[in-house]
Image (cartoon, rainbow, N blue to C red; front, side, top):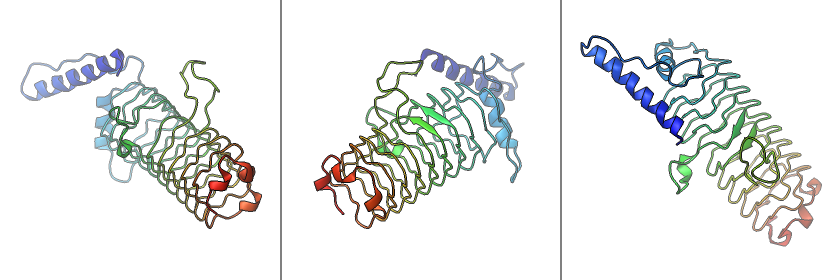
Amino acid sequence: MTLRGRIKRCRIWLIAAGFAAAGAGQARAVDLGPVAPDADFTAFQITTTLFNTPPGERANFAGHDLTYLDLSNLDFKGALLARSDFYGTDFTAANLSGADLTGTRLDRSVLIRANLSGANLTGATIYRPTIYADEKSTLSDAPKFSGANLTSISVQADLSGADFRGADLTDANFSPLEARPGKGTLTTQPSNILRSCDFSGARMTNADMTRAFLTFSRFTGADVRGAKFNNADLTKADFTGADVSGADFTGADVYDTNFVGARGLETAIGLDHAVNADKARR
């Protein structure tokens, strides 16, 4: 965590301690101002608003600067968060299921064990998030996107182990913005790392998975029509029952990739000349 992040966590603790002291009969609470200097709300204000939101209603934080806040472990109760900026925000173990995150920026956010199932992330960006609690990259730390709307999302990340079952990834961009790292404001990866992800039943029409590492990932029953897997590593990936019509596998490594029962193989592009094409299962 950056020094700025540690300072903000310290501020959160001090603010909470101040309120606790006031409740214990102290003369006054400690007020050190907002958690993030540029954020429109403090973590305390957001927590209080969510706690007081009646059942069936949705808290509205749409269109706000909510950068660098510690919002870990919060239940957002399907809150309206569209177009908000969550750069560097900590969502560890947060429940964002059903939330409206349309057009949000989740770059450099912390998504360890975050639940985004059924959330609407249309047009959102997730660049270089923190996904794992330690260097072991434990797959169970990965966030859940099952049933989420990820239409036109842009991602640069290691999301290995993430759950995308039944999600809508139409026109999703999982290809790096730059061919080489070190260009631009964000240091980019040469490839997205999506090992052991579950895309079963997902809609992935025209999704761009160029150069992604997708080893051991599952696409069973998925709709990947027109998707780009150019130069992707699909070693031991499973496309059982998937519709691969018009999908582009040019330069992909399909060693022991399972295409048994896949539909549209005759229209898939580059599959017969892909790396290890003779080792793929059909």
